[in-house]
Image (cartoon, rainbow, N blue to C red; front, side, top):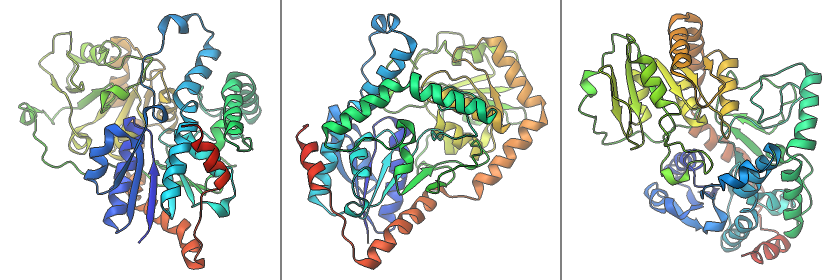
Length: 451
């Protein structure tokens, strides 16, 4: 039996896959401790894991940004300040909690989501003095490459010289402040500076888990040896689903289109500078675009009321579990949440993506590059643009064929099972050698001083 520590931020895209991994590890007879927001304590216990709640300062800050201040700030400065506030400022508090947990118990492995930067002092210490660390990325792969444009620009791969020039600009201009702040914080924790760029810290881990298939991600000739594609990480199957009253009325003899602006639970962990509850961004334009079309439209709203009249071909629900809904869907119109797109791709669903925040432009760009759908290149498309995109993916068989190819690729992988195999892979050598990793005392002491 192994002892596993999982560290994850509270937003749904970070915690939901980790809960699935935790449930699987418990089922395999391992002991799991989850270091995450207090709001998820009940969910952690429900899967049989032990909960170690993060204090508020160590978790994702969901308070709204000051809109007036942001309008007076340059876009580059605003981008860096968002990264610093949301991900870097919690680092010393996360490191302190991590030190506390590791000081009280031996763990055979740590799984940390990419946003949990409090694991960096541990990764920058002596590998022999820590458990193996597996990074899990809840976004498209961020790693720099000669074969891709830098992460965050939402651009498909270009000529290597163009990729290089854009990467240099991104690292030395766009994200220079965030990178410098990271090293300043690490120094305050008694840690050495990053040997790589901020977004490339996944190369420091024993394994970097990528929850998709290679067909969806840009090819890289310089992919680091620690990267592992595992396929989609599906949450546990839904039990006790109560279908809405109109469920039996869905006409599957014509195409079914699902539209969502993100299925975030709890809703308070939505992006603080974008109102995902504003139905005019995507859901209402899609309803208007398809109200006279020969399709059935299924809308999920997360409880936000619609202002526009719902046409007869449209059905609305607060929430429908994807394992129940996706088998009925031909096309998903989405704002580009990475987890939702992976689940749709795994189900062979064609995609229309309208994403402009967080990692969503990168998700949308990969949807277009993989041939599974259309990137609308905006987070607030017009009804005309949505209608044209839906019509195109339904009319052109190339999208359907490519979606089926990805469905087959995903079907050949079980993300949760492959993560379990990776845990066994990194822990087996230490178990054979009788090695008991311990947390570096100097870093532990410095980190605790930040609480």
